[in-house]
Image 1: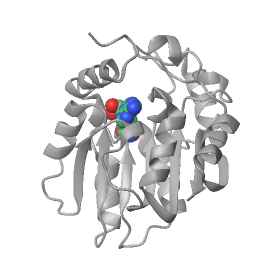
Image 2: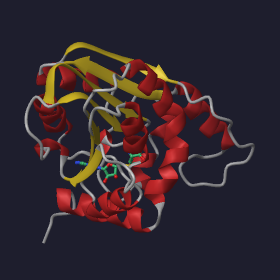
Image 3: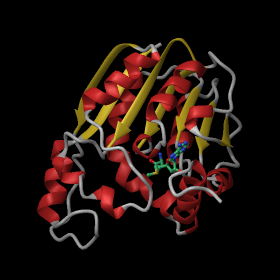
Length: 229
Ligand SMILES: C[S@@+](CC[C@H](N)C(=O)[O-])C[C@H]1O[C@@H](n2cnc3c(N)ncnc32)[C@H](O)[C@@H]1O
């Protein structure tokens, strides 16, 4: 039996998200914060890119269009997310999806030009080990980009921890940056990516107290941490 916080129960929880269609639904929420990051990555057509915690693969597909002579690999611990991602990507010949855990990326060392991870890293059982393995699969000069909405410096997301069915890490920007430095990354930096998408006047979901808190959360912005191998 897997223990409650093992990788396997994490995969099972995200399999349930995938079956409920939540993988596809995340594009709308994450695109406004992911787009500025794609610009910062300055992709070249020949780049090879790893998308860690790719979910249903919307970002991997967008990346694959930007690197027509390179390759994109989407990886996720949830095999059901991977099934959804593959089903929606049959028209791509430079994109593949693999099931795996970030601390043991099923890929050769020194392969990727960039690695990106959107709204995934606070779920990783061992974030330091995950960042270390991302470092392993990047080539020299390659860059890693982690983008998250749930981090200690934004007080408007702290309630998520008790709403989520899996353990999470509520870590500060500086602590994430320290994981990057310990893994060997240089030029490590972090910044906020403000979500400028329109906010509803009334909020009826469960993640925020009300529309005002959602607006405050969005203007604090998502945390982007990056570094170079
Ligand atoms: C909130 S979803 C975000 C998915 C996608 N990046 C997006 O923006 O739509 C988090 C994803 O991270 C994956 N994930 C969580 N922990 C992981 C781990 N340790 N290794 C690989 N993937 C993981 C989950 O299965 C899930 O698909």
